[in-house]
Image 1 (tube, protein in one colour):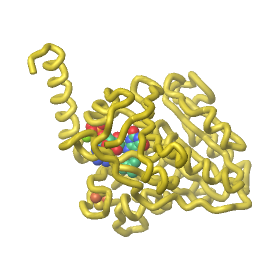
Image 2 (tube, protein in one colour; image 1 turned 90 degrees about the vertical axis):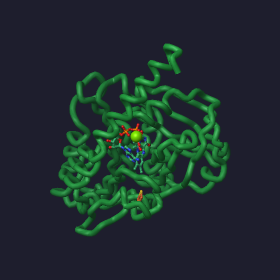
Image 3 (tube, rainbow, N blue to C red; image 1 turned 180 degrees about the vertical axis):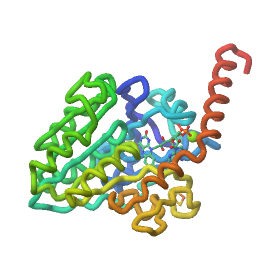
Length: 284
Ligand code: FAD
Ligand code: FES
Ligand code: MG
């Protein structure tokens, strides 16, 4: 069992868990993920390791409520225990010294997974530029954490309620035009944002890495659920990634594959809400 030693709410739909997992924290590297199961029979939920503390023996996960399982997770209080926490999984992000600049683009929930990669680059002395984007001011989190690790930082909101109004690719385009020494862009967020980032950097010829949050089941290369086409070849995001060269990813196919269980996901959430209502009414 894995204890949630700290829970922090970032917004009504976003929360952080710090979970006691000594061996996992010891072995974790930026870019890797875990698979969580709440209890026996629960579905397997992949989550990026947003931070880890080898001294405290904990890993940090940041979760956005998007459906049945993440809503169920949001209701667990501090002190609760998780049945399984499997990991670290996936190939760690490739972090190496560069005499140029590295840009980190995080959109929404992608901000948490991009953070340990940013910190690793800063830790080896690279010049770091962060661009983090949210839908609105109420969803903003980890601004200070990012500032500490960034030589330059930009915040955008879709509605202009905080930072600059617009999308993360707006400042990115300007930065690419201004800084000819940008050597790499690392982008994590919704698929549409990662695709737009890839389209933007392609014309500047700047290497771009994305972390793909494909649908995963076993997380060990056996089920095929996370298949993605990269450079015309089949890849399994759980074992060959999750980091890939953004310019080689078939995003159109991936976006279709990501929605293939929408009907089942919707009915599972409806069933869960129905059961919650019955529980509240003391009928089950
Ligand atoms: P559902 O209603 O079941 O699904 C909603 C949507 O979530 C689906 O349409 C689909 O796009 C996606 N999804 C559903 N099941 C899975 C699955 N088994 N694997 C991947 N995506 C799925 N989310 C976070 O909030 N924080 C993270 O740090 C994070 N890191 C991730 C890292 C990786 C490597 C991957 C693959 C996914 C990550 N996700 C993360 C996404 C998270 O796993 C899904 O949001 C979650 O599984 C949705 O479960 P649900 O039952 O609440 O929603
Ligand atoms: Fe099963 Fe990747 S999740 S092969
Ligand atoms: Mg689900």
